[in-house]
Length: 127
Image 1 (tube, rainbow, N blue to C red):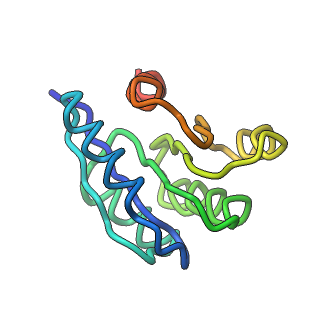
Image 2 (image 1 turned 45 degrees about the horizontal axis):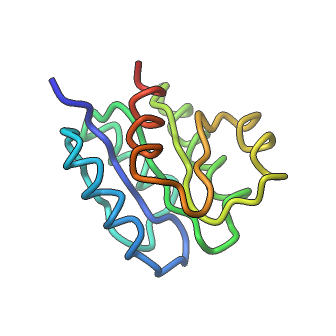
């Protein structure tokens, strides 16, 4: 059974070219990908992840709101009794990685992450 990944854009970040490339990369690697579209809330992402029975949630964060929104997605999942891991990618400064991890984010991919790194990171947080 292939890994099921929900990818989402949370908040007001309207830049979706990168997440579409990531979605295609994961699909081409044999994963099932659900893309929720732009302007999602932490609650809608959590609800969709549970409804779709995914193995991992991937968030694309380019707006600088990652320190607020990513932990809220983790919190919304945990409030629903879910331990689905959350991976965050995008413009994430190195100094924010430890705090995101402490907030429950399973992995962080920074700017320019290679396709093979995205696939291996997603696979590693699921296993």
